[in-house]
Image (cartoon, rainbow, N blue to C red):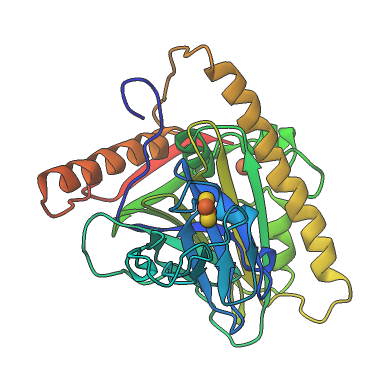
Length: 351
Ligand code: FES
Ligand SMILES: [Fe+2]
């Protein structure tokens, strides 16, 4: 957060824009991100393109126009644009006009698709594109699930909420997850990784029912939870040949609103009828609990009260701000990013 308490996003990363299934072939979708009005289209071949959602003529949103799968037509004066933003036709031009549509372009952004999400790249300068984020999937057959929400809260609070170990028993209290009575002291080892930190454990959250389910396979369970800049929480659980991976990202829509996109893949219980719907039901409940608490917090934060981050349970949040500051400094000064977390640390808290 800057001096005014506003969340600033970091350039030089891929950000999740929307779930793939929300953009059908030959369809278009407007989606504001980073305070920018963006237009996403999926062309007739299935490829996704991201453009500035303004007509370069007189600024009307292109998303108010029409799209035939190859060209976008503005609804005001019918100017047409290819998916790469090139103006291809200006209906009002006379043959002797000196206006050249070939010189008119809508701004475009790099976009990509992976694991059920559409991503957009936010540039630092002319750097080469890093790989698009993806889930680690240790076997070929798996179930994939995407859940997305828009929350009325600022990005930074959404992100530290992802890495907050102490809210579980209070926000996610449910018989199938964990109960208030199950709070006990935890001790977890954290270590620095590229652009973030990792929590590794060999006996994950023994008080949660969801993990207990994996135990029925009888193999030891290992789990890692990574936080990686700019906004990614990556969880991996393995138990013998069974695995579960998830990626949660928090992306700013504008100063007041944030997207939470969650994608999970697993090869556990495949073939159980209705399992995907059951998991969607519980996944949605879980993510809605986070959304509700984030929005309540945002209501409190409107008065800009003083905040506290305490050692132990809030240390990951402190690390997030340190990582973010170090990254911003490296961009401003044009220097190599250096992880401010230098060595493994053991944290203790009760949850
Ligand atoms: S405003 Fe788009 S064609 Fe005129
Ligand atoms: Fe949560």
